[in-house]
Length: 401
Ligand code: NDP
Picture 1 (cartoon, rainbow, N blue to C red):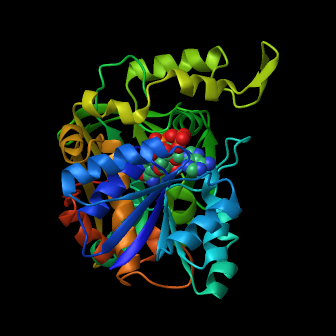
Picture 2: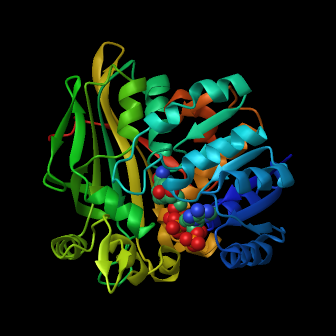
């Protein structure tokens, strides 16, 4: 039984808090803090209505280390679950160290003024978390998160050696809107417009953004075009699984999404450097975010399913083998359960599970951990019981591309 402080009242924070409330034997009390208290209060009202559990709420600017430390000291949680934006990761880690509590997040740190996300900044906290006897778990969403755990599970149970790994992320959901991003638009567009990068033969191979396309027939979604992209879990998988010769990440995009993105880029609306407008500086991408629908407003509109998984090829008992582990999540079912669509659901549920495993001591340790370093079994077990069941398929042949 433990008290938890969740920071960030977006779609992911909403799902995580709803699911925590549904597991009262682990989360004895929940406090939700975010930049704006009204969003926290709206989530608390939904949680109360759906589960009968009262969530306490607070306003917090998590860029402010002193204010975040003070809130943690006042709330006295066992751990902080950071579901704000990647920009806040370091300040919240600092506050956790100052207040002496464990930490978990779903996305690695990214500076505001540079579209560059990498783990180096957070891995630099290794010695301080270790010395403090505290645990920091990084990237506990779906990808990174569940896909990293799928890889660890593959290595533990299914293959003796992994040679190649492909992560396939398909969102077959349709909002009916011409253009919307299914999580924070600023973070989403920075990620999608970055050059592609994958690991092959001991080095990173770079290419222009969205320039390599393959079609794949996703179970319960159908054939979709998916594009080679850089994604943050590649960095830690390369570090912790040096045996894997090639690691790639693929994400599906519809033609309409890509057409809109192309135009927005061409006219400069995805820029993250300041431009002068009517006597004041604005960041075009932040202005664009203000125009686009809030991801949390997409819940009632989204139909269809997500299908996310890993295909690993390697050796088992001396023979070649390919295995595919995936989860399929229905947008409408996710919305019915928590009031949020499947992209928030597939991120918020793993965040809740990671927190539950830390609180119950099934995951413990001092230092900074990526998901693939931890025992996959209790996490995989909880995915099945907490709304994200997965299946393992033996494939007849490795991917042909
Ligand atoms: P949203 O933008 O919907 O929500 C972010 C929340 O954080 C908002 O409530 C926002 O408040 C709050 N916030 C922003 N800045 C601060 C601050 N300085 N102090 C306190 N609160 C702040 O994002 P999502 O819920 O969609 O995503 C949450 C996180 O999950 C992101 O880091 C995202 O990258 C990550 N993610 C990870 C995935 C994975 O699979 N690993 C997949 C999808 C998302 P306000 O409303 O006032 O702006």
